[in-house]
Image (cartoon, rainbow, N blue to C red):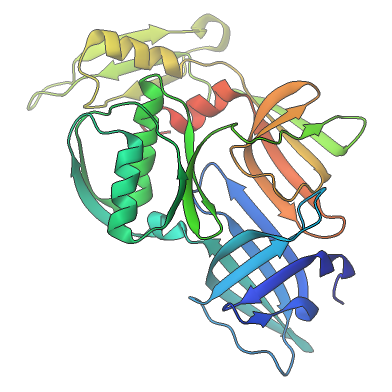
Length: 332
């Protein structure tokens, strides 16, 4: 049975076929762990179904929460198709926005010192034919970079991490329609407010020592057949939580002062995230700022189960947690 609540949404295949009547469910997910947003569209296959295959375009549009006109929520490419027949055939299409190509395509680059992450993004976009939208100037000159064969997104993420390590803001590449934007985290103009006794269904708070760091060792370049020199060793709450050590070895860190600063940035105690289930606000995206019970928090991940009404599950965290978890130098 088709959910009548989905009539507030529209799915278009290959820019020509409107699939309103056969749509069973739509979810859209986005996370700071990944560059591309993902839609999962489940549909019932009818005799007049036009056919579907990976590589085709698919667009999901809907009326924003509190709005009146339909907007594009995700415009992407079908990456996978799975079907099952139980009397009637049902098909699930997995759709990514087009920034997925940056995560799955590899190349190599040599960048001079002094360029900003914005300038490097412009270069990636030019080389790969990626249309750019609003691209904010990150404003921080970066060190020389030699990127051997690796996904384009990994290079861009390294540029953004270095920007943060040198005192810049946290930025996120974000596909809006068919253009790639670069936006500061928490810069959304509309900040949605959620309250425990008003518009939320469930609030789960998680505190854990997983990810906690109480000691950081920063290593320099190792001589041949020798141990790496220690540039800095910073201790935090080892007496309270025990020794949970991270090791950084970054060729861009060459002085004791820079090593000490990098180490201090990673020290952290109990990790706290909050997961909220609520009525869907279908325009909330990863990296947005929201208010929960008076606290300003950032969206780490969001899952929209579209409908009228729909529901969403949002993982939230403070800015300092996001900075350490997603923008720290070295392996996470």
